[in-house]
Length: 357
Image (cartoon, rainbow, N blue to C red; front, side, top):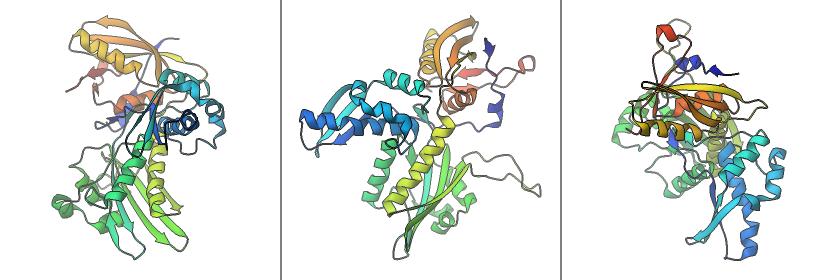
């Protein structure tokens, strides 16, 4: 049954305008000793696991029975491979359409390429009790590991510069103590959708971590006494790790799991027919760009133009998974602007296509 997609819940959701398009979701690379066929074949499984981690946000692919059939014969997904660098790295590209088809058939989560950018404020206490912030100016090896972990997950992350401007607004104790207001103020200079407060420290049994994730836009709710807006975290986690690097890696695992569960789509048994309405300036190139964008979303399939009236174009499509997942994806796209609700169209949400501005 055809019906217009009502997106009223979006009015209550923060608009994300710094989302990053992750372009290497279906590529992976692994280190090899040589260029032999035997080693190339043996590394396909490892590369496919990397790719599935990026696509699902899940960290334990190999022990998850839902993926067992996909890992039995990984060669069928490979489209090309190549070698580069020193140490020697083997790069694989996988068939996106085949992987998506297989994942949808297994009702696995699929996290699309538009992903939120998170600014990470992380306070680290070392084994001597000294504390420091992880920043762009910090330990190069630790920074490289942090960036490598993020790349393996397709997780857009940034770190503060901790220059004079940051130092004036926020201190190490603010981050360590999770004092959100000064951190939120210092975060305003950075483009991002969320910011994270985290601490990692050692104890007698290893390392511990705490984190809290906040949207850039504070909610409009008030405290119990009716004063001002209250900035509330959307996710809080804590845990243990064997080492400092494992603790930092665990922070990323928590973020990836949260975002994937929020933005990923899971195919349901039935696909509902939906229609979205976009306002354009009137150029044919805009229509083509919108159609290309919609066809790239993992939440929809069979996208086609269903109506054109003046500067309004309607697209019909089948929703793969839930309407909520589609709403979240539209909310992430900086080229899409939600239009105010007209009195005569109270049950309809329309969009304006901004394009690449």
